[in-house]
Image 1: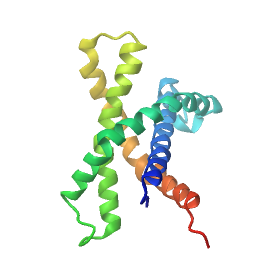
Image 2 (image 1 turned 90 degrees about the vertical axis):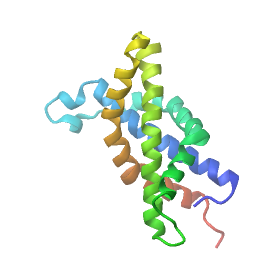
Image 3 (image 1 turned 30 degrees about the vertical axis):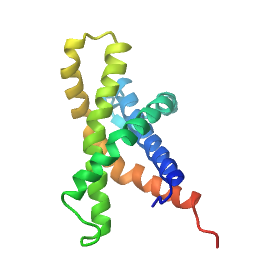
Length: 168
């Protein structure tokens, strides 16, 4: 786990971009109608991954900024209300922190995406924002939860350990 300010920033960037890219692949596939085709998500193509990559370049930065401002702290606070690493299993505490962070960041990023893609770029009216936002949270939360627990967090931990190996 990160211990210095530099390590925390690098860990945060890796996690932010891992989450952003996974969520962008998911949302790009939905936008392209892939889940509606026979075979569903098994029909992903390189175009989906490329378009998601382009969007994740700036969405990852938004994730990093918002998680640094409040998402990580609120996630840690939620976890601390249920788990103490000094007494409880530290791995369980880490999972609770991940869950708390997803519980904060998914609605936050769904709001950011709703404003950016539906209002600014899509031309929807401001009065439709609450409905669009709730629908976006409902669509994204299951993916964000499972993507974080089973892909983004394990990848981030693996990459972080590779970058910051102790000199042997």
